Length: 176
Image (cartoon, rainbow, N blue to C red; front, side, top):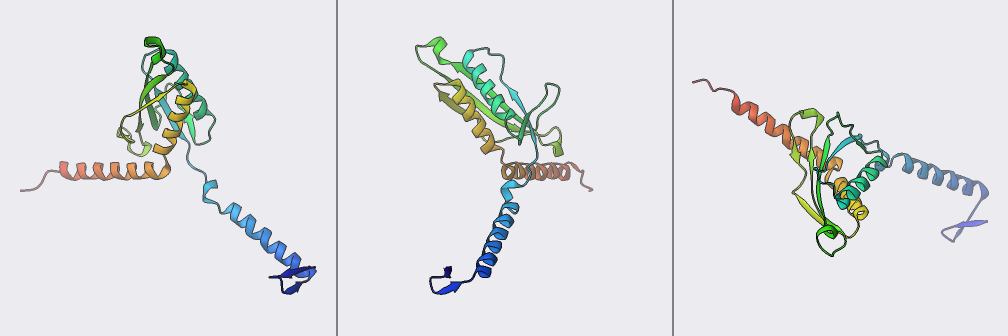
């Protein structure tokens, strides 16, 4: 027989009731978790220039693999325009020096469906260096996730909408 707070004896019925309440609370917590809310799928385009160095190819391939393994992002088909664009240019340090690894510059661009034709940069141009192209691809993916959170995309969209509204207001001719 159990005890409540170490003082009062807990009957079998009270123990069952306590267990049912506990299980109900756990189930309710699992179903009300905001993390389980469905986020929209974001199409991603990767612009990696014309360089065919091994480091850039490895980093971009690793980034594509990480994007393909998620439910939040999908690679856009070549004929599609992605909502998110990753611009990546890498140099392979091992080709020109006696160093291992490479360096990449990258940026993220948001092309919201709601405002076709308008874009916004999600942060500044970034630089990264890494000894491994696969590790660089993972870093690119993690930075994409940080830059394209739903909260950040919502703020960017709101700012773009405000700018578009202001443009329309300013473009209207004033009556003399």
